Image (cartoon, rainbow, N blue to C red):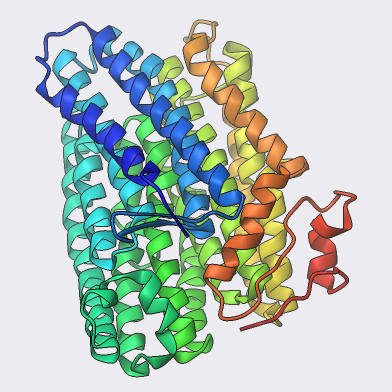
Length: 528
C-alpha cells in the first residue's frame, strides 16, 4: 500500500463546496450555485478517476494512519460514485432550471439542493474509502442526513412524508449496523490485544481466522440487517419506493445508482471478515436468502406499479437482490459478477431515472397511464428511455445482460439450479412490466394534449454519455475496468480469486465469461 493524500483531498473537495454554498446568502443568482455545483462534481469525477487509475496499476492507497484505504474493491465503488455522481449532477442543472421556471422550486431550495448534493457525495465517498469500521458506520449514517433534505426538497406533503419515513427507518435500521460494528471491534480487540488495530478493517480481515466464530456470526447478522436496510434488501426496504419516487429525478438516480451500493460495500467488507472467520457457508447462505427474497418480493410489486419512478424503485430492490445472490453464490465468478452488476446497474438506473425526469418535464406526471407516445413527442428522450428499459430488461448488447448472464452462470456452476430458475422466472415478470412501458408510454399513441418538442440539450447530454457507457460495458468491458474487477474479488474471498470479466461474444479467451462459466478458461477458479 502507498501512503497518499489523494483520498483526503477527494473528501475535502465536495465537503468544502457544501460548506461554501451553505454560507452563501440564498438570494445569490442561480448561476453562482450552479458554478459551485459543477466545480464540485467535476472535481470528484477527475480525482476519482485519478485514484482508480492508480489502484488499477496495483497501488492501493492509504491515508491518515490507515483510517482511509482505497483498494481494488473500494475503487469499484469509487468509480461508480465519480461517474454517476458527475452525470446525475450535470443533469441536475437543466432539471432544476425547469423546476424553477415552473414554480416547483425557489432560490432558497436551489441552495439547499446544490449544497446537500455535494454533502451527499462527500458522505458516500467517506463510506467507500473508510478503513476504520466505526467511520464506515458514521459515513453510512451520514448519508441519511445528506440525502434526506434532497428527498424532501419540494416541500410537498408526500415528499416530506417520504423523507421522514426514510430518516426513521434507515436510522433505526443502521443502528443494528452499529451493534455489528461494536461486536466486530470487541472481538478483534480481545484477540489482538490492541484496541487501535482492531478498529481497522484491514487488520480485522488479516486476523479474521483468530476471531471468535460465534461473535463473528452475530456481528455479520447485525451488519446485514443494519446496512441491508440502507441497501434496500428485503425486508428492510420499505423506505425505498417512497424516497426514490418523491426525490428529484437526478437524486433518485443517485440514490439507486450509488447510495444502495455504498451500503452494500460495507456488507461486502464484513462478508470478507466472516468468510475467513467461520468459513463461507454461513455468510453466503444469509445473503443468498435475503437476495432471493428481495427478487421474489420486488418483481410482482414492480409489475403492478403505475408510477414510473416507484416502478424503477422496486426494480432497484430486485437488482440489489441479484447482486446479493451473486455474492451468496460465492467463488471468484459469483463475486466478480456481483461487482460487475453493481457497476452496470448503476449506469442503467441513472439513465432511466434521468429518462423519468424527462417524462416529468414533458408530461408533468409520473403516472404511466397518462404518459403516451414519448417517442413521437420527444424522439431523443424516447430513444434514451427505450434504451434504458431494454438495458434494465437484460437485452444484449446492453451492459446489464452481461452481468446478469455472469450471475446466473456462477449460480449454475455452483449447483444452484433451482434457485437460479426461480430468480429467472421472477425476472421474467419484471421484463413483462418493462415491455409494457415500451408498448404504452414510449411507442403508444399520443393523446394530443401535450405539445411536441424535446427537452433541452443540457438534459440530453449526460444521458447520451450514460448510453455510450452502457453500450461500451455491454459490448466489451474496457481492459482497465476488467482488470479492476478481476482484482477486486481477492479482497473478498479467502483464497485465489482470479476471474475473467467481459462480454459473451468477446474473442479474447482470457476475457470470455462463457469459458469461465463452463470451466474452459485458462483462469482457475478456486472456491473458498
